[in-house]
Length: 200
Length: 302
Image (cartoon, rainbow over all chains, first blue to last red; front, side, top):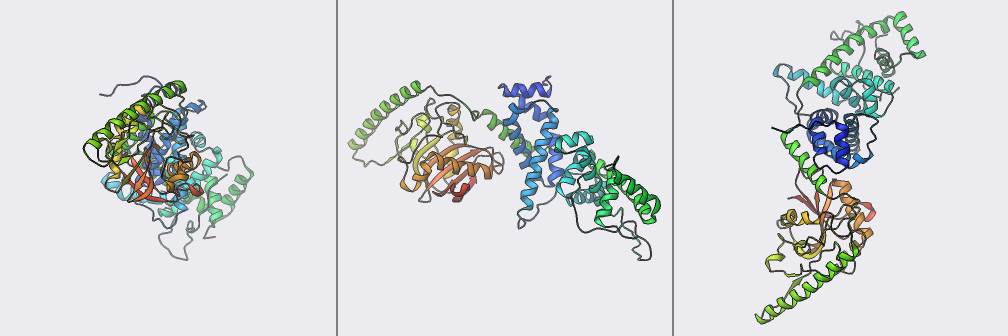
């Protein structure tokens, strides 16, 4: 059985900065699953997520001395991880000849697998900034204010990115498509082909 | 109105999502929704769809997403390597002590060489020597690591950093280099991995020992084709380009050969591509030109 460290995250981070060799590992152990989930859902690719998480944790480990305590340690870690993911996504987009790898392999209950896969695929089709906001707020359950801190933008921007992202996902998932496809019947909203980044 | 433009959809989505709250634009959209049938329909549809997507995303979040074991092991390895490595700003050097250590090693080296030469001459064997040099605190002085190529200490699997001496092999530069050796050995894809096997043992004593390799000019000590990379600035540019590309931390640099050609063999820990293993990158003399690796000859893990 693993020993339980009773220190809070901030104390552990300070202990790490002071030379405690086990403190940072304890912080990682506490938060790695959530950080992994964010990385996996933001990048949509297992290897990219692993690379981004490793980059981020090594950056955090080396930057621990700079942590000022303005936010919770977990928020600080999430920010580093999300930024690492967005960096990787941008780099991937700048190399168009490299095919996009397979999407995440997180298992879902059998009955929901198709829906979950559709949702994941739709999420991956969003612009990275909209996706990151939706992953934090709707998937991971962070408050808008916290997501704003993590992503370093205004709360209104988070709301806008989430709302626009959901609207596009609704189109992609068919929630806004007129199934009758009868030109005489007014569509609810027709599907758009181009995408723009949300930002308020 | 049966079709919404992207801008309309974004505007309506912002309204539904509360991003326009308290702005004059919210009043505009509210007016459109209350007076225009298409906007009213679209609004009703979007509110329903927005809720549906929220539910689906929430369900996605309820799926277990624990870190897979292989990723966990990889992260553990990278973090352990980073934590046990000396900090980049490690200040270690007691110059007087380092000078004394160098002097002692030089004396041992001379004695060892004399003994070895006597043995070899007595045996009627030609002597071929590989120069092996560890620089952490030994500048360009030769060390006790000097050994015949065919001898057991000189195999690629056992480069004997600094002859195994804990007090001088450790070097550290701004680029995070723990050790630099000049073996001149000729590695190949099958043998270069052996370089890391002895590194685990050799790297431990390197921690926080010796002075910085950053400023050590080796241009006079390395084969002519690698002379440029013997310079601290060029070497740093090369190593920075490598770590920028692959991440991680340089733990060993060997001025050697690869498949017969002069090459720098660089061993890294905690890279993005090493999957928890050490990454070996072999580069040629042009490494670092233009702040890029530029001259990579081989890459593999061990």
